[in-house]
Image 1 (tube, protein in one colour):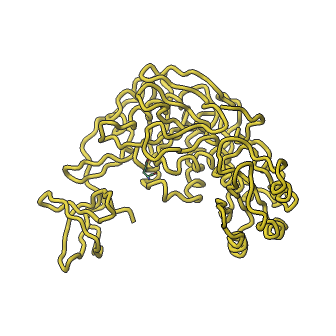
Image 2 (image 1 turned 60 degrees about the horizontal axis):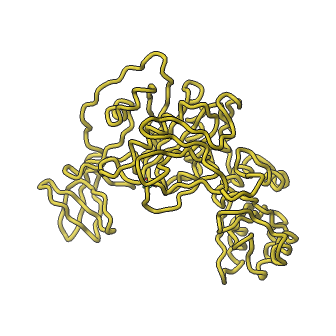
Image 3 (image 1 turned 180 degrees about the horizontal axis):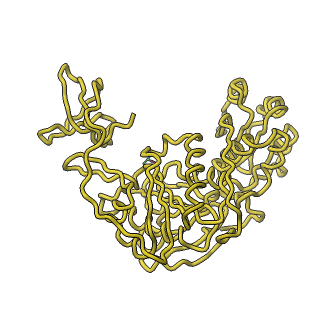
Amino acid sequence: MNLIGKKVRIRAKNRIFEGIVMPSFTGNFVLKLENGYNVGFKEYELIEVVEESLPRGDVKRIEHKEGLPNIKIISTGGTIASKVDYRTGAVTSQFTAEEIVSEVPELAEFCNIDAELLYNILSENMKPENWVELAKHIYEALKHYDGVVITHGTDTMHYTAAAISFMVSTPKPIIFVGAQRSSDRPSSDAAMNLICAAKAATADLGEVGVVMHATTSDDYCYIHRGVKVRKNHTSRRDAFQSINARPIARISYPSLEIEWLFWRFRRNERELNLNAKIEKKVALIKFYPGLSSEILDFYHSKGYRGFVIEGTGLGHVSTDWIETIKKIAEDSVIVMTSQCLWGRVCDRVYDTGRYLLKAGVIEGEDMLPEVALVKLMWLLGNYSLEETKKLIKKNFVGEIEPRTDYW
Ligand code: GLU
């Protein structure tokens, strides 16, 4: 249970303490006591949550303006959703439209915002069932709004963006946005990312994008394709990069001019459709020197029939995996991707690759391993094993670029 921001009573060091749970970077459990002091505990026992969340301040109501596009913001949590007041210890989530616009008033200049708090979770706690629920909410929102923005923790945002890319066929922009630094820090990227994301949600686009800082300065954001993007740095504001593709567009800040670079679907090109079934028993396995193929047997014995291997270089694992792969491929789909990330898998160059292909491995082209994982979950949720073996190589939403280029 995420207790941050909640008022709790605990037992520790043979005493009872009451206070507000603070974010902690040391691994200790930190409480802000009534007297204002923070105390860290290595061990404690939770007695009860005294108050779920602290009351928020008054916020001004906003009127929708005639003629402006209508945007729905769906909040799922993460840094962008949290604002920690280190004086009181309160953690607030910006989830009402009024709160969001009072924090980021620039939004009201070019769009009308409605907002919904779906989750308030860190994205490492996202599960495939959350993707399914989110897809349903996005689908409903798209019936009534000109675009949807999803605020999300950055750690797994690219998995969710990929899942939504496959699940929702969209005539309108679906834009994911996060922040590397929370909005209470001077270097926060939250406001600019959110403004650019809302702008992208009003744009002439009909696909899933991820909007984040393009550089370490506050000069522009990129819209990355949801199936071609990855978080590549733990803390930099420009952590997200398009891989094996150019970003869809660049949004200058603060002018909010959009320079289109690499779009695939414009607004209203596709019908709105939802296909949110998913098979969770799909494994992503990173090969490393010495890793035993028993890992495949293990998953297989647990009922897994979808495997994405993050192989070395052009798409290899050691040759002593080949017998196991051959056996497992009889009733499973095994897709090879590369831990190089950039470039395309090609198992026809070296002997190892040729043996792997003969054993039943399918080349994952230039798909990111995470995207291949999500795609395989989605395909196995909707199609038979034999159909999935063919469809994994089909390009649905731009997850496979036909040409290998030096992006
Ligand atoms: N690890 C958390 C998450 O991904 C916080 C990081 C962030 O939001 O950027 O939700």
